[in-house]
Length: 330
Image 1 (cartoon, rainbow, N blue to C red):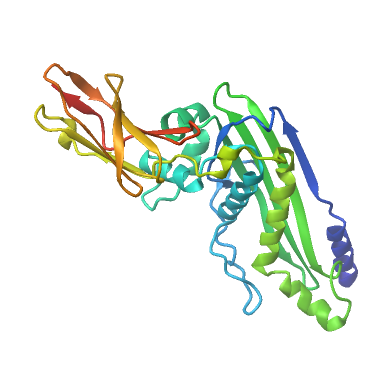
Image 2 (tube, rainbow, N blue to C red; image 1 turned 180 degrees about the horizontal axis):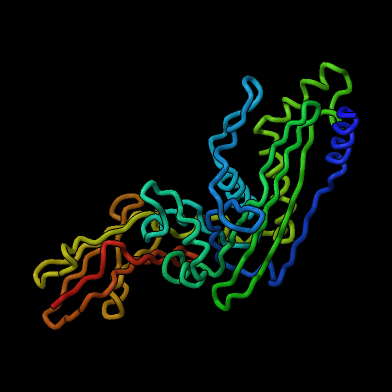
């Protein structure tokens, strides 16, 4: 009787079909600049939960590979790569994560504060941190690897949502759930292979491949045949920037020096609030930008932020408010 129940459960698992759905509410060739936010794993109620650990957490010796990423991290990377086939101008994940860590959206160990990020207004994230037109949220709903003696089943489920920061409109939603089985319902028929194949089904690379296929199908509506030329080049970014005003005060006889680190070949400048605009910065060394502001006797500035901007030859611009505080001249 127990053997019959196991057999029937395996047939049921084999019959589980993939589920995909999507809704597109914008022209996918529209040149939107998009930030893919850190993904979160969620429970059945949609609440953010701690990551299940890295992909090799249940690895079997000589069978499974240790990939060293959480499911949320892996799926985000897969989405980021697949969006390279779209017409979207996607910010690098490194830039997004760096901005979060510099503006209080990360813990001391630099892991993103997912609850704070997901609770924030997308418009605030783009206007104050990321210079983007839309953000993409990712929620990992399932990341399961079940072993049933004569069957192993890998299941991945993901929800994605892209929101415009201009008006809060949902531009694109897509959901996917898919499975990969090894053993009784899929694989060799010999008895020894029937025993070994489910164990091989625990290999981390199987669920990784399943995840990549899932993401490809989910993002198919965004794929374009010909990408704009400017998307083939690295987008402007600011990896780090700072000024040298001690205690936020700029002396009249000493210049304010601003340094920035970013991709080479950009046009860089900095501003101080609305009072001082677009002071040029020179790329004195590769990827290192340098600029100075010399106060004039009549200049009066009261606690204004210093903002660095970099632009490429296509007119794409990234700006960043420096994290070491506003400055004053008086």
